[in-house]
Length: 202
Image 1 (cartoon, rainbow, N blue to C red):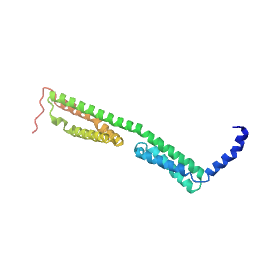
Image 2: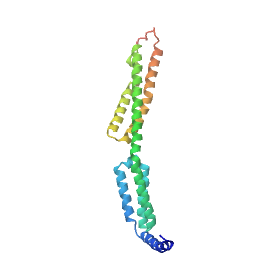
Image 3: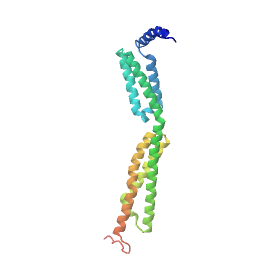
Image 4: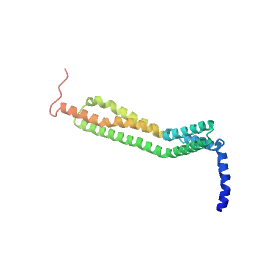
């Protein structure tokens, strides 16, 4: 295209641009609403909540600007809303994988703690340590096992957000489990040295 043709076409282009900004960006608003709906179906509100909040805010701003007849600003906000919604939907798979991984790590750490407890109990049995020595910490095993089941159930339902939260609670419970059993065993052995029978209760 020659310079003369460009100069002659420029006023038409500017006129079209101004005309476009003189009416609501209906198409862009519809596209933004569609992108947000698709992101919700992809569970973006659960797994990419920050981006979804931004997308919703941008769409709200677009609607408000339409009411104020700021169609150029409305167009910009509508486009931004659609982009944020698509980004939120795209972020869901990786977010799910991260949360799933965190829950599975919690499961593995809890199982390791239970295995350590089993080894301590075996050591205690060889030393003829009675079950009563572990009364204070015995209920913790049941709590850890129940927490492990909660994580497993959430993973089976593919509710990775809930699984991660349950996993965080599980890690807290499991972290103190083996230490509690070891402390209970050491305390009993200290109070009942070998070669000396524990005093009988009156």
